[in-house]
Length: 389
Image (cartoon, rainbow, N blue to C red; front, side):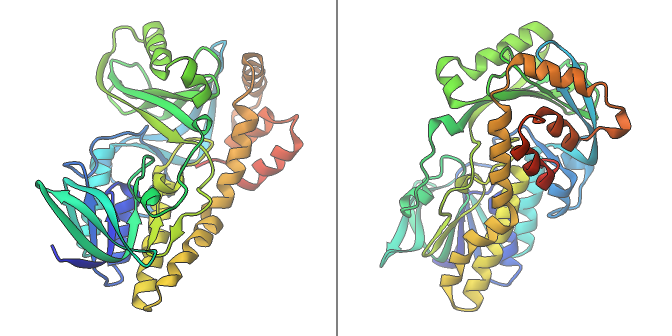
């Protein structure tokens, strides 16, 4: 490992390794520091993503695809099930393998990746970030960088150390928990979403198939709900009711920032990508694809700034992100606020009404239109985005 690199990236999740790849492909030196022992571990994710979200960055491969999804299933509080064909297929991934493949692509492009490297500070000179401090094998080290990319997740300290306001109101942080369970009788082509007070008030409950009667089962509820009742208690109730004999293979829990992107995601010498920048889709809570998009934009701009010897160019990152997805996420946030406070009766009415729609006329866009028929301003927003990714 050298004492200085053009770009140092903190975090080897999808956002970080994609940023590394797109920077390294332009011939600059890149180092990725990951605190955990393995790239892709531990997995804290529902693992669902659209085909387009994968294909922009890597050729879909069955070795990291657990299930191919062609339908969206909504289950209302009274148990009414609505099936909606997807216009574009999606996948439930094996994130450990998927993340590993992204890391290999970054390495092949020329990036260096170092695991078990715990970043504990930034190097700052003249109010500009110029490197990072970290521990590796019990030794304190420093490495200089022209640009630091913070890809260290929702709990990101890198942005905070750089003076970027990363605070999020607890009401915008969804409390999430998930298990991977076997012995679940579920088809491999449908992701199911449960709504209502029993399952996930001010949020949703999901069952995502992973093949061979195995599924990711979890939920996210608003911070307000989570303060009064734990997300785990909702999950336990669901499993006791529907799958009491299932085998629990893994358990995870954490917070998901279901809110719009941070007001500022770049500063002299540093940019933030992925969860660190709050680039999660506020409506679905999905962050894999949007994090990779943020990483691609960030890595590309960082390399351009270095090659042109004009580091101020990294400050264009905020606008580039906003033009690609930031504005779209603001619309998703409005739709989320319009939906998450629905009563159980409202969800039931939507399900009953939509089940009368012929299958060939069903789409997610039409489902949202039906849900928000009494909110004309949100109908315009839905028309702009049509389907969430």
